[in-house]
Each structure stands twice: as structure tokens, then as C-alpha cells.
Length: 123
Image (cartoon, rainbow, N blue to C red):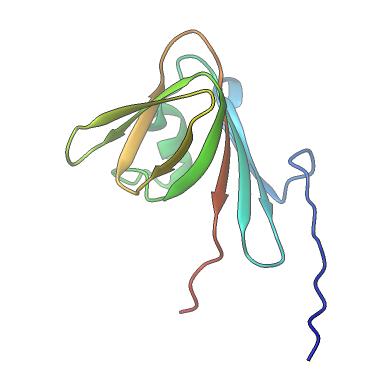
């Protein structure tokens, strides 16, 4: 039996969807045929999850998403809401953030992240 594999490439310059946070940044989203999602996020100084992203997601209490990613620039402070534990993510960090968090940009520099989400589990 032979399996034929193909390589798929996508670019954030031509996203499938975007989350526009106006002057505070945004997230460009690409979806691969396998169901994997890639996101390029830009958060400007002063950005907070509470003020800038939460309203666009229907105002959940905390971020409902699991994030796996890489930090390209800046300082992002992520807080697990239930425990209050804060973690600072900076340039060069590979990270995993479970649901139940909020976050804010720390300092004068723009935060840039590349995030990946695996295909959804079959229901």
C-alpha cells in the first residue's frame, strides 16, 4: 500500500480569518486542510485580554483556548485566573498556556506570537 503525501503551505498575509483589535493589535488565522490552525498575533503596548480581546470572544470569564506557541518579540504576562499565578513570556520562549487565563503586554514593546492549535477531536 502506498500513501501519497502532499505539503501544504499557507501565509499569514492571506488569512482565512482575522480578529481585529483596532489600534491594540490583531490575530491573523490560517486553517490547514488537516484542521490544524496557525495564528500570528500582534499585541501593542497597553493591550490587555480583558479590554481588547474578551469583548470580541463573547465576554467569557477567562480565555477558553489552549495555546501552544512561540514568542517573536515583547513581554506578555499571562495569569492563570483561578490560582493567580503569573508567567512572563518573552522573545524566544516556546510555551503552552491552558484555558482559564488572561494576559497583558508588559512594557513598551509590541508582543508578536505564532500560535498553533491541533485539529479538533472528532465528536
